Amino acid sequence: MEEVLVVDGYNIIGEAFSTSVLEENDLEKGRDWLIEKLAEYQGFTGTKVYLIFDAHMVQGIGKKLKQKRLEIIFTKENETADERIEKLVREIKRVQRRIYVATSDHTEQWVVFGQGALRKSARELLIELNQVEGKIKHTVQEKYKDKPKSKFPLNPEMAELFEKWRRGK
Image (tube, rainbow, N blue to C red; front, side, top):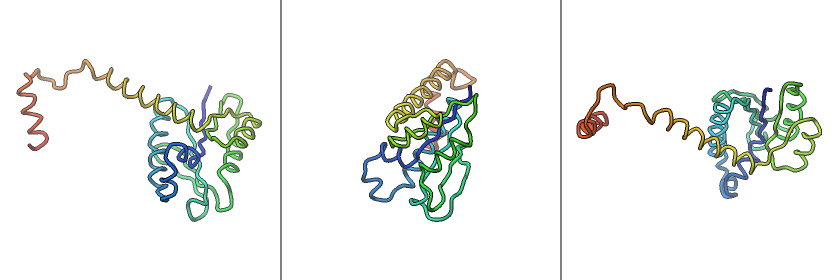
């Protein structure tokens, strides 16, 4: 069964960062961080991710873009992220598709649950993102643990010398 995750971007950013990030209007930093985390999540789990941001935080008309293979949607000027999430859930709902909506907005959780989507709180998603990051690190370590770093066996002193040359020291 195909899995889809629809994320209320600013809701997750608000949970992940202190309120000072939101007060300082450093939302771009928060958006970049979340895009990076969700791209890793999508790549590792195979879950299709849609990331929704409210238009009132970004000037202009609504737009869709693909970044790091994520579908990122900025709502229209008078459209909330909740409205766009509800519309998207209706559009992508299929029998062989399990849809999760990540938001801590309790009203929104119940609305999308009524439409057949499963809900995930911001806190649950952040825990899951951290777990995936740990699994990725573990997988990389396991994959490269026994591989030689060079095709030619080198003693530690020669390896250190070559490493210094490589770094220009």
